[in-house]
Image 1 (cartoon, one colour):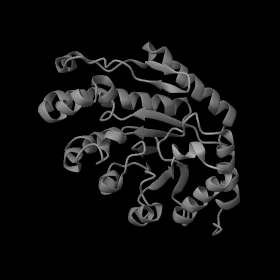
Image 2 (cartoon, helix red, strand yellow):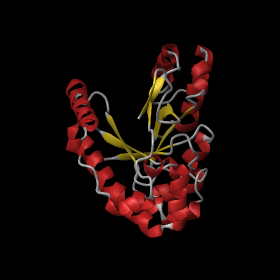
Image 3 (cartoon, helix red, strand yellow):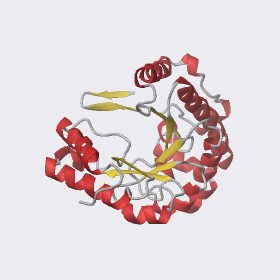
Image 4 (tube, helix red, strand yellow):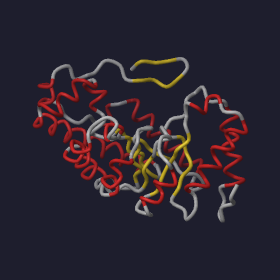
Amino acid sequence: MIYFDDGPPNSGEPCIKKPDVINHLEPPQLQDSEGMKMVLSTIEMLKNKAAEDAPIIGVVMSPFSLPVMQMGFDKYIELIYRSPELFERLMRINEVFCVRWANAQLKAGATAICYFDPIASSSIIPREIYRRTGFRVAQRTLAKIKGPTATHLASAPCWPILEDLAQTGTAVVGVSALEDLAELKKRVNGRFGILGNLNGIAMTHWTDLETQAHVKEAIDKAASGGGFILADNHGEIPWQVPDSVLATISETVQDWGRYPIKRG
């Protein structure tokens, strides 16, 4: 792990140095990780405090996107194209762990699981490759998670694979700030909920009036008829976003996000 003073930690050196190592890997055990035990304990405390008053969202990295951290981006892309058998073995290992970790969070009190899968986006990998790789992985994995899931592409566009996402069984999809909420809502047509799509980077310098305008625009475009959760577009708000902006988002939602929806 690499730690930063002004943001969350990030992954450091890849743990899989050579593809052949995949043949000898086994899914990690949760009880062997102090960090994971701490997360589960935190979820339990939140559940005891919040009861049913607020949802608690657990998080997993999808088996398909995790190898970017396990191997490095370039080595993983090479694996997908050049070593289908090793790729498939790595997916099976990651699937076991992902399901185990998701269900442990649900058991601890999480309301739903965010399934982060940025590599699925067609801005990173062609749809035809996704259809025979990450799409199948998502179908297998989500079917074994014992609670609702929200698939998030971490600010990457979902439009090209929207029909595929609808077939994975996910309940919600996180959408990009680059996409039009009204068009997405129309195309989705109630098959799953939409989560998004405030721009977390731009949010760092929004004024109160700009914040109100962006929130009201999102509500106007996507809230009618339900099936919309207002959020940032990445799944993580930068630490540099002022508290005043977050407070204004909350206040604007309270004023304009209640049903029946008011038009601004």
